[in-house]
Length: 245
Image (cartoon, rainbow, N blue to C red):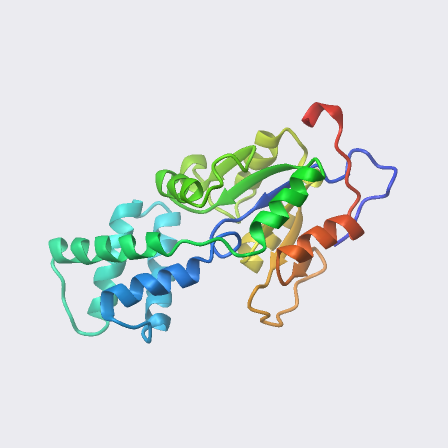
């Protein structure tokens, strides 16, 4: 990541945007718990993950609404193993899975200390997420983060999804800062880190699984959110003008 000169007020970091799923929330563990509720184990996780990627892309593209996507995904998952579900049964199983997943929602251990540090540093905060509005707002509230952010920017409400530049621009505008004054952090290298960098932000890839993939020169990589506080404290000039207090 290229940092701004120490004497440059305009490009000092004034805000941080954070993805939600698998960045703040351990979404994979919760989703695995939902799968175990459906079939008794999570050995079919790779099939569920591939099915989710396929149907979630259709939701993000606007081809399916969120509820229809969830039911169609569950139907497709069981069809992959030769079981054909009618609409009512697919919806019933999806409801059972969703209830189990909600009970399993948990923040990663590094989230609250990181948010507290960012607040103490005087930085403005936004959640930026590709999801359905009501569902994601429910999730944020259930995790105790309803008051944690100055802005919550959700793809369904904006009309475009990450990595489209407009969702990042919307977040910067909601925070009252320029894109170059924002760090955006997320677990998807292309969707989050590179997308934010193309939108003029400082893109940071959160590689919690230590994949070993190397980001390009436009992004930084951290293994957890403790690494974010170190990155901001050591590598990026932070400046908070009175206007953002």
